[in-house]
Image (cartoon, rainbow, N blue to C red; front, side, top):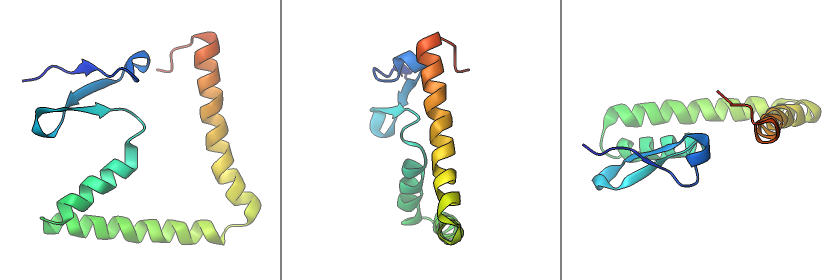
Length: 103
């Protein structure tokens, strides 16, 4: 059993590297997120029917969300994108300048 090792670019955030496929360490960082999950699900969908059904549902959900987002007024679309970005930027500034733990 492999022990997780510190990820160099995630060390200050407390991120770890866990064993990945083939025994190579894979990064466990917040940057990978949904694209990695969708990519992994797409690979699984090549082999398993349950993954293909789940991927189909995810694609339909993404199309519905995109349709609703496009139908919103421009100012609302801007707010939907800008407000979460401002929250993240504010949190990063507070953590870096005040040394407050994000957890």
